[in-house]
Length: 221
Image 1 (cartoon, one colour):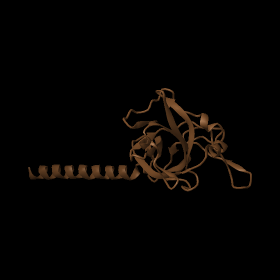
Image 2: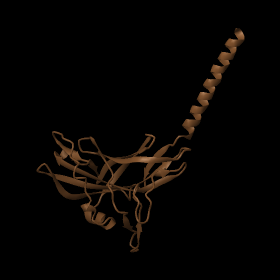
Image 3: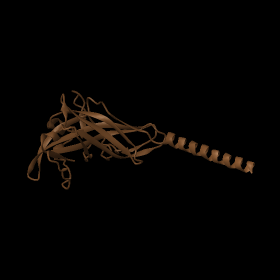
Image 4: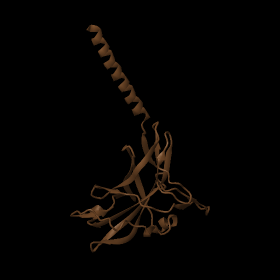
């Protein structure tokens, strides 16, 4: 009887040890995402867009271009499911924006007259595949473009301090893991944005998208 109890206890301890080892291996092998803006003082911009209209009200629109990298410190490959911009407004609220489809940006390099084409995250173009699969110990990078459209009270305007708008990029993997990073956007004129992406002011939100209602105004996202 005592021997049987000892064997049962040994089997229980062994199963617990095996379970803990499996959990440890799973946790050590899982993807570990991190996200960083690339040259944060250079490649992150926002600019005014032509005004729009919603329910007979004139809206104020802004474009946001962000260039960032997403890395994987884990030991398992993973694919990205989403990458969204959270924009801080004057009233301290955060507005979530979804990325829009854009051509690959082409940016002039200094005064040399030459230019460089950049990838768009998650979008295949003439030059890049727009990869969102991140291998273990590797990273992917690309541009993303967002539009925020506001109506009503000015409290919904982007929070701008010393010429910079405040936001954060939040990415999520197919396993539901998230990572985020603050972004500070430098204001540029629309004309400069057009030199990087032709007709960027003609790229717009879906017609079916409506602003969220609020007594002081709202954001169309």
